[in-house]
Length: 242
Ligand SMILES: O=P(O)(O)OC[C@H]1O[C@](O)(CO)[C@@H](O)[C@@H]1O
Image (tube, helix red, strand yellow):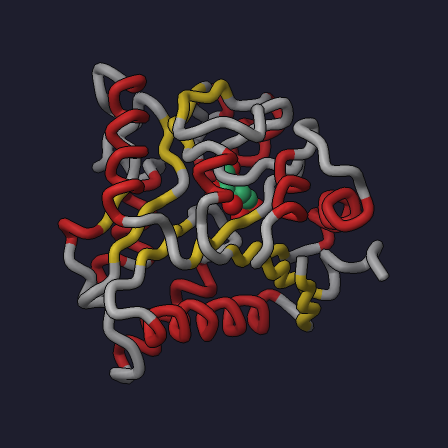
């Protein structure tokens, strides 16, 4: 795993956005894996700015998001559909038919998982996957204990994850209990991965990732087995690593 230390959230976001733009430039039909949460918001703002300055076009880009809550309609502002639409998609020239998120509002989540895997396969795998890091080491919504062999699946969210994400909801009880997430093996199929981590509260997770063992009890540790991963970490989050 290649480690890039940057000053702060702004630099992390800029660095990641430049990496995404380079991937788009290097491929005729780029396939991007995208994340939600607070971590990538700044990167999305840089991408929108670059698009507005005509430095990049998303016309030929296909996107796959990592995850979606179960039972939250796409029109609900807490859904990851809504997040992506408002944080990125509606501001750029991506073809809406080429953006994919799991449908968390389906009657048949198991079938939705299989369909999502099929769509990923048909797209020929992800050229660049963007990841954030959960406090407990989750990537996507793959919580500790998720098998490294997992493909897209339904997951019960950890209490710690529901607590961490309660800031987006009116009440903690409103945070969904389940989600559909790309599996760890699905993520590992990506040709390249960037993992963005910012902020002092993630410093223990970063230490565990960098210095700890590769173990299903800390899902992000699997990334150390991937041949092309870059950790972009800001100084507050990198405080405990060399
Ligand atoms: O960026 P945040 O909000 O700290 O969340 C970290 C990770 O957790 C998730 O939001 C899922 O809880 C991921 O999508 C994200 O990468």
